[in-house]
Amino acid sequence: MAVKVLQSIHVPHRKNTEEMAPVRFDSVKTVIIPMAMHIGAPAKPVVKPGDSVKVGTLIGEAGGFVSAPIHSSVSGTVKKIDDILLSSGSTCPAVVIESDGNMTPDESIKAPEITDFDSFINAVRASGAVGLGGAGFPTAVKLKVDPERVEYILINGAECEPYITSDTHTMVDNPDRMYTALAMLKRFYPKAHIIIGIENNKKKAISVMRRYSDNVENCDVCALPASYPQGGEKVLIYNTTGRIVPEGKLPIDAGCIVLNATTLSFIGKYLMTGIPLVTKCVTVDGSAVKNPQNVIARIGTPAKDIVEFLGGFKEEPKKALYGGPMMGISMPDLEQPVLKNTNAMLFFDEKGCRVPEPSACIRCGSCIDACPMNLMPTELEHARVNHDIERLKALKINLCMECGSCSFVCPAKRNLVESHKLAKLYLREASAK
Ligand code: SF4
Ligand code: SF4
Image 1 (cartoon, rainbow, N blue to C red):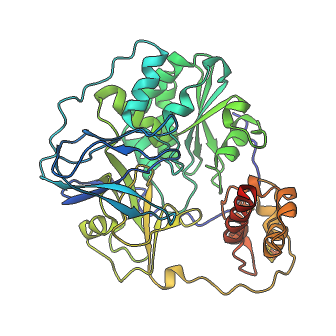
Image 2 (cartoon, rainbow, N blue to C red; image 1 turned 135 degrees about the horizontal axis):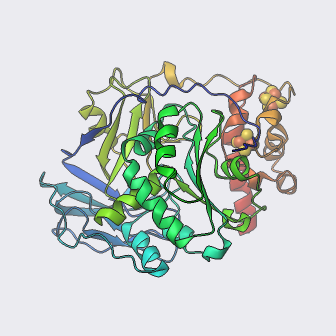
């Protein structure tokens, strides 16, 4: 199928774990499960210290329409409910559970009965599904739209960030789950053209998905150029359908729903088994890690436990990230747990995370050429330094997806993306006033 391509850049792939089968880590002693692992209202804890829980027991109910329920990832005893510092800098309550090591499933777990569209949406909501590629938007909210409006369902299997291979493994290792979910989407959004977008350097994933998609009507696999940020939502929509999401609107306003490949796979698994979202495949890599690997970990497992399980660090990490090096967020400490939307945990030694000193802008325009949203990063930085809110609005800072391409290509090593994040903060403060 024809592929249109927005501006993109080439980043080193460093997919060290691509050929390694994921390993399971179940012997965690204590899990820390934050009630805010999604966009929207945090979940409200429904357990208290001393309660016994099993795998899949509801421990947090959705805190509103845009929210998601949260389930225990181990069997054991609730130790406490304590505030945890999140990588965003905010805090939220977290349920701390000591595992009994048995991983006993909750008796209530059973595959949902899907009879109509509403029961499908209710099942997705009850599963605890959120965007597992990083965004964390509650999936039931995304899917609860008039099916007549849905012209395309795009499955995002691009996985364009360096190091991360967890989506690719999900597609290759569990195609039956993907197929179950695709068939269900076809049932409830019959008019939609389903497109599975995968970068063309992931040949195995493309071939497996093609084999399965052939059995789903109006479903294609689109081999996309291996460039960054191919997996950005708006980029994927444009590159596969040629459509542009109107400013300030959602993908559905362009007739599209975008689901991450791992989210789709999880929905398939839930429809088959009724097991809610309690584990996650996480790529663990980076220059400080002795044995990089994909780990299927219990949600709430502390980062340090996973690395220890893999054999520890080569040397003390100086930087730990949730997600990839382009868009990842720093972890405040190694106690930070696996979240629903954690696709990678990367750890870098001093050399691996050294940030070069920025020098003056030489007005080369490389950042402008690299921006997939056609923004002017250097002008945005100038407006931010001058606190010029009107200019920031005119330059459309709101369209910046914080992909980091501008920073990556800048020969003067200016930290443009950091500047854009600050600029958005200024704008939010100004609108609040
Ligand atoms: S971070 Fe923003 S300004 Fe920079 S390239 Fe990405 S979208 Fe453009
Ligand atoms: S890439 Fe860097 S040096 Fe070149 S115009 Fe942009 S900010 Fe200036």
